[in-house]
Length: 352
Image (cartoon, rainbow, N blue to C red):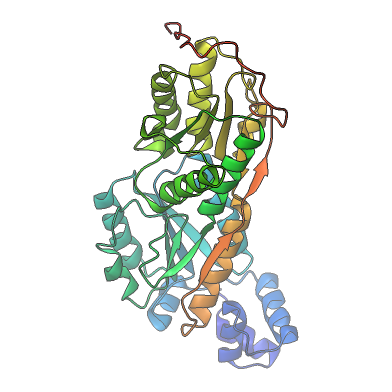
């Protein structure tokens, strides 16, 4: 026989409303009552009727997350942390990939809303605000993750990318490197802010970053290693060859490092490399990669906290959460000054 919420309420001598609040994690009942109700639910293996609950409340106990690429380590780790945090509050997580396509993203948004998700989290692939307002005007709480639109009054959880770019610039300069280059990402807020922070750090030391030493590549979440390899081949044709390279993300840096190694350059003695994201496998590479850590798991936890708060307290003001990045130094860079070069002649890359 199916156990109903009113059966649990009767057994415990509380109202159905109180039992429902315990299930939803509402703050206006005592912690003792909440624990009693949840313990009874576990004892009788109570399974809430999600369809009925969605019809009654206007949303389900499911949170939706749309990201550009489901297999990218950053978004995979973010989703894992987010799902784990939500599970503790009896919420589930459904995932979708936009494949870096605004049209697909819009369709996934429509599908998520049709399922009456309790809140919608998006790492948007859009270059502008167009279309986002259609979601923000709905009653479903919206949280932008990783990629922000500062002009739009909407909730955001992400990294302080500008500060991360500054860390990268200061670190490479501390090695005595002065011929620096940057391999950037698409024209979205993380790539823009990382570049501006990097550029700002260099300018504070009286160094300008020539346009020839910068490149932006698309689809870096999916094809970052291939893009990094191709761009690094171009940078190695410069005179002098860059002695320090800051990359949009770790995947791009991995490709760039491989291009340098294939061309016979020593890392970090001749070229130091720095990525962004600090994905888990970075320390296991042939040359372990220095990176700017985004505290990815913490981003997932913070996003879960904010989503649940917006569901339970709809009047919550728009919230922006930016976690401070940290520099993680490995073998692809070091703290010793680079040796003085005897010549600035271009070293021709060997054919792959």
